[in-house]
Each structure stands twice: as C-alpha cells, then as structure tokens.
Length: 225
Image (cartoon, rainbow, N blue to C red; front, side, top):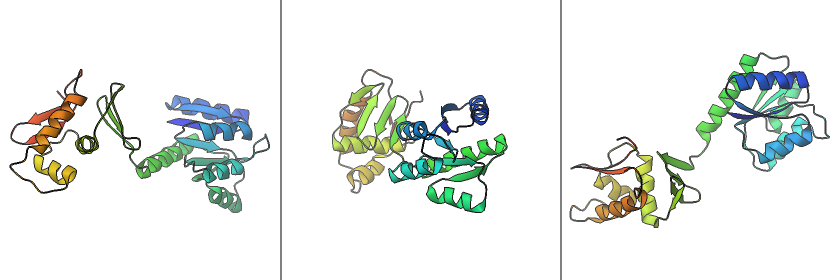
C-alpha cells in the first residue's frame, strides 16, 4: 500500500513510518496541516493516517472536510489523542472512515488500515482490464499492448472487452453474438470470425499470441502457453 501519514509528533510519526515500511508499505509524511492537505490532494494514496491537532493553521478535521468536498474518497484513519465520544463522532461525520485513539497498538492500526483499503477496493468500480501486457482503460477507451497504443473500432473494442472480462475462459461464437452483437446465433454468419481475425491482427502483431482459436469450441484470450 502507498500511505500518507499526517502527524506533527516526531516520535509518533517516526514510529509509524518505521513500522509501516517494515510491513512492506510505501509511506509519505507531512508534519503540518498545509503540507498534509497538499500531499493528500495531489498524491495517489491507498489510505491516509490523519492526526487531528496539527500546526500550520489547518487541522485534521479541516483537511478531511476539504478532501471530501472535492470528491477525494481516499480512506482516512483518524489517529488522535482526542478520544471522547463527541470527538469520535465529529471525526467520522467530517468524513473519516475510522477512528483510533492514542495511545494505540501498532498491530491494531495496521489491521484497521488493511480493512479500510480492502473495503475501498471492493466498492471501487473496475476501470482497467489487464491480460498479460494488454491493457484496456474503460474510461478513456484506450487500449495498449507493451506500451503500444492500439486503435480499435467500437465493435472491436466491445469484442475485446468481453474477451478480457472472460480471460482464460473458452468463449463460444454464440456467447459473442449474444453479448457483443446483441442477437441470437445464426449458424450461417461468419461475422464473429471476421472480427476476431481483425482483432487478432491488431493485438497480437509483434508479440506473444494472446487471442487463440479453440477448435470446435470458440476463442480464448489468455497469456498461458
């Protein structure tokens, strides 16, 4: 995970950075509110550990409220010495996802971060499909293989998307007609074979073959030999 710690207490921040790095995570640190809000807004983090009382004129609650107001949904674990019920309620209402009171056990903090990131990943919409070095961005409709951009027609894009969503599975011509062309199987049509052939020429040129014909069955998109 890539994590941001916003904490002004040097002893606590060093303890967190050391422990999280030893657990295999990448950690950035901000020691005041101004640096904290800048890093949180511009960096791509899996989660943020946020102290409430910070120097720099911006406290942790203000940072959280600003992030949520601008659409930033990065999971935030509030870590604070303020542990009264009203304090916890205020932090959670501001947009914090969890609240841990100082002093704390590092194992519990790590478990809470894992749970926050796991929950966020489960609810995050899928925007990228990947099979080996073939990548499809569902938002921009950009397809690349090994860094090379592949230009696809709308039908080819839809065909490849279906194949990538069913990677390593045998996909029949009937399945493709029903899900890519939206009509029932006609045994006389060769529309699937024609489009698959054109698609194969585009994605497999100069690289390992990914799109394969399975005799008497259909097609399979796979990186396996």
